[in-house]
Image 1 (tube, rainbow, N blue to C red):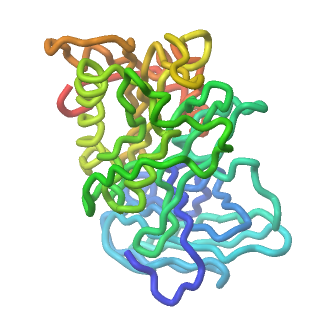
Image 2 (image 1 turned 60 degrees about the horizontal axis):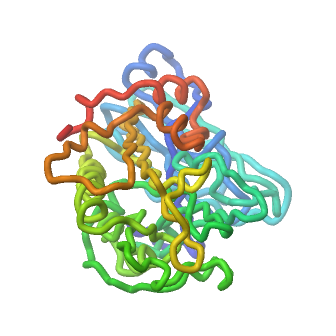
Length: 370
């Protein structure tokens, strides 16, 4: 969707349905048939150029309006369940808020969007996103996101927490939703240095000698845009992986399965994904080349959001050769188990009650193809 006559860049803030502020003339009908929410944590966005999703669940026609002109919606009417892109102008003064009103039939709901004051932002702007694990921080760690402009919107390619002392990421995080699950380009093989990392802490091609340069955010995860695919070839997104019997076999098969889930609209409105190789707690095979950690284990944490309902699944596997007889479902685990293995707190930006419930369960039968 292209939003006309807007001169600010869209900064997509794709997050989960969360606790919302709703008023409605009939609470029972709203709960069953009509509800709205924002995908911004605590219904709050930063002081800068930003966008968010207004999520509308209804069986009928709806109309929407915003109280203040510094906040705009890309569409103000429709029929049935809808994801509406909202945008906010930069805020150069104190914190402010506005009310978004949606009506459907004889029901009306409101939600309050807050925008932080000028200069009031977290160190890592995307730290509150659902897919971002709890940061380790520390002097050796860098957390940042790579962006491209796609369909006129500033879009996150993936986010990363990188350990300079080990020249390897702690994790890579990204999302699948309708726009970014499309295939508009081919693999670029645009190998390059990550401009966010000081030269002294970068990994280079020679550091992967004896191993594959294994993508964490796979090239095939980002085929909606040539620029986004090129960013998957930064060496910071690579991990030294055993070649034909790991990277090109079981790891690739799990990646392909997750990519099919990313396209499966019956499964997700948004699919949140975290991938990585272990570099904490001594889970390192060795240091290769000029000091690049070779992980002993690899993991994926996946969270699906569909119609305000969540489900999760994890993968945990040892970095070793695998024969052709493996079954990827044998390496499935819950997110709680994955957190015990990795020491990483996944999906901690969910409301606590939802996080506790969703991270405990791992129901294979709800994930197609397992």
